[in-house]
Structure formats: structure tokens, C-alpha cells
Image (cartoon, rainbow, N blue to C red):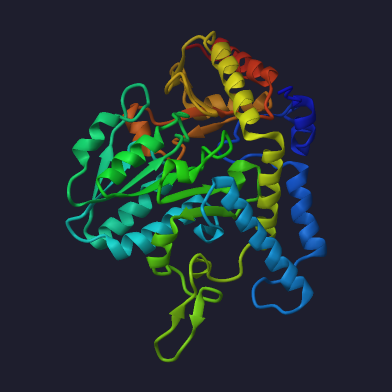
Length: 407
């Protein structure tokens, strides 16, 4: 495919601005991606011309808003190749989706003496909810470790599983290292032992096609804002047989069937029993526009473009003195590094003066930081709208910092 980078960059208004007197080089899409005009306009149009509360409204605006929102549910099901739109739950984001599973499935199924497996590379959102439910239920948490290359020690998984293991929760792509985990193989191994499986797809869905039926996981979760959509919206895919058996974790409107006093209230069917209260309808409409946008370009084309850009960036960064790059050679979207003895915050602050936006800190992955014995890392994350010239500027900026501050 002839990838028209200039046309694509024109779709993102913010990329035209300057920061500190320099053109913006936005290398922080793993934290939150920028929005194309198609998404901005779709959400704005909804609020200007179509806003109404959804569900149970008999007037035309409400009925249309409900239809539009449910069409996005259908669209998300097709995007993930779910078997039914009833396997798609609207949530606020990846964090809420994992908390939903932990507090519904986890709290109702885990018992004292059970155990569950997470990994050393997880984002805190796929650690802390499981710690909280384990504390409540008496379950044990086991950790699949990393090797020195920033990849999971896959051979250790069999040793962690026993007759009381109930769940494997694993990220599809590391938000720090860009490591692409073999989730299909991990899920197959877990399912062979009777485990339920959850995959955190927050850093995967924007980089290539995801097929939940092919992966065969029980849950898959991601956020809209990672894939060029609005904040405050996410998707939890759940296998229908599991969702149908799970109790609600929040109470309120829309998630009920009948409300009786003093007790006896009954629940709506899944997925609506997990969507208490008024949803972020405008955000959901914008999310649908984001899915349309990336599919209009093509996820295969996006993947090819980003992989070429990552190879280019890694090659350029190899020339920077005293630069330590963490993680495997083959990666998706992100490059984590440190420059000599300088703290990540200082490096990020200097780069910002050159108009280069990166993320610094522990990246909500403190266990991973401890594994590599560093307090923080710099992270440059690339999207299909980034250019080779921006990778050049990153390498040049780091070289300039090294020259100014030393190693």
C-alpha cells in the first residue's frame, strides 16, 4: 500500500501546532493517542444534533441515540470478531473493564486456597484489582516472571499452574517494552488446565488486527483513547457463557429487570446488567468513528507502517552515546530507554524544550522497573501518524542532551 503520511497527518489537527518554538513531535501515543477530525466531528455532531438519554425513551432523539450506541456495540463486536454483540460491554476504559471482571467473576468464583496468575510486566490496572479481590477472597497471586530480554519466561507457566489455579491475566503487548506476548499459545496452555483467561489489549488493538475467537480468551479489554477515540470509553469482551453467569458489580438504572422492595430485585441480561447508569453516549459515538477511521486505513497497512518506523527509530537511536534500550528487538509501538546516569524526568524535560513529547516515570509498571533495577524509564511511543523526521529529532535531541550533560 502507498501510505500517504502527509494526508494522514493532516487528519490530526494537533500535529500542526508548535511546542516551545518547535514543531510538535508527539511520541506519547501509548499513553493516549491523538484524535483525528473524523472522531472530533462525530462527537461534536452528536452533541449538536443528536444528544438524548438512551434506553426506554419513546421520543425520536432518544430512540436514535439508542440505535446509534447499539450500532457501535455491533461494530466493536465485528472489530474483535466476537461471536455476538452481547459479548461486548461498554466500560470507561481498560481499568474499569478489569475491575469489572475482578469484582464480578473474581469475587464470586475465587475462594481461599485458590490461586491466579499475572505477569511481572503487567500495568498496575492488571495487578491491583486482582490483589484487592485476592485479599477479599483469600486467593493467592502467582507471578510469571520476565527474562533479561523483557520477554515472559514462558517455560515457568506450567510450574505455576496447579489444581487450584483459576485464572491467567496477561497483557497482549507490554505498555513499557512493547513486547508482543504469544497470547494465543498462553491462552491455549491455560485453557488446557481449565483456567479462565483475561487479556489486556490496551496496547495491542491500535497496532494490528485482534481476533478474540482465534485467541480463544474468555475476556479481552481495551480503551478507546488508545485507538484514536475519546476518553472515558472502553470495551470489555466477555465470553457469553461467562457473562451470563456473572453477577453485576454496580447497581443503578439500566442494569435491572425488576426492582422490588424491600428485596428481590432482579437483573437485566448481559451485557446491559454491567452498564449501570447513564452511559457516555457521545464518547461511544466518537469511539465508533475511531474504529471507522482505522479500518478505512486498514490495520494491516497500519501494522506494516509502524513496524517500518520502529525499525528506523531503533536504528537511529543506536547511534546515541550511553543510551540503554530495554526490551526485545521485535516490539510494537514503544521504545523504553535511559540515557547514561541521567534521570528519566530530566531527559524528558530537555526533550520537551525541543518540542518532543515522550513519557517518563514508572509507567504504572513498578514491578517491571524493579526487575530492571531502575526507578524510571523514558518511553517514546510511535503511531502511524509519526514520521521518520520525528525519529531523527528524537535521536538528535538525545545526542544533544548527552553532549550538554555528559554520560
